[in-house]
Length: 268
Image 1 (cartoon, rainbow, N blue to C red):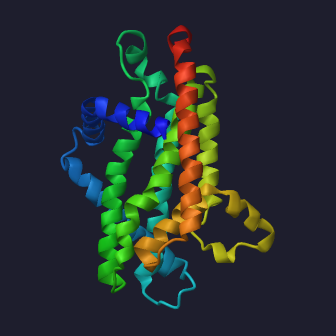
Image 2: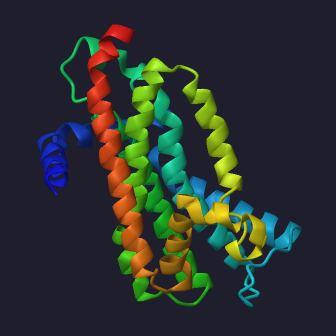
Image 3: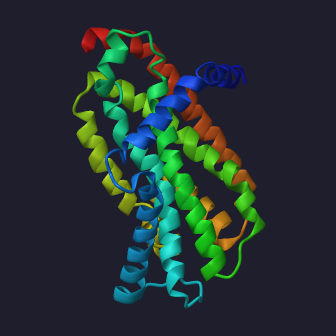
């Protein structure tokens, strides 16, 4: 509890810097383009149309729900990818977060822990827009929207904590082990295919289900689909366990980062 209070106090103390950097990073993604920030809305809408065409027209895919709505599969896949991308985008960038901000390490007194928070914050901006589109398309094309969408902050909490903890760990390791970025890139691509994003957990052979039970992405994706698409509340005991484990990983990652950051300047 004391660690949680310290983290909240840390965020309050640095909230101005954090918001400014998140804003700068979000805007810089589209700097120089004619449509600017509008691409944040257009990109997910375009991808949703692509998913709808590929999975419903080419693969003739269905999700074993009995619903013949062609958009259903695309919305389910898009929901899974949105959840996974929160994790994947931040983690894939983490090994280079400190390396790409050498000036803040050597010449400026800067709270280095913010690098991971900035990466997570800018990713959450895009994820929020994607989630809004999922809610709108679920309501319009699937005909209903459940009260369970109100559980979104609670369901997102373990995703955020888990991602943040790994980001602090990897951003620190990236300073000392330069090859880790390449390994993480391979792991991110593999984990996407080994998580139930493009297929249901129900189709996984029994001999391989053990991996999906220990894969945290499985629970994050399934919980998000439950509240946004299926309209059912996730298992409370499992959700509490997710939050507890993710919180432990988050605090462990932060402790590791703070312990190792003293040597960053010497290595860089």
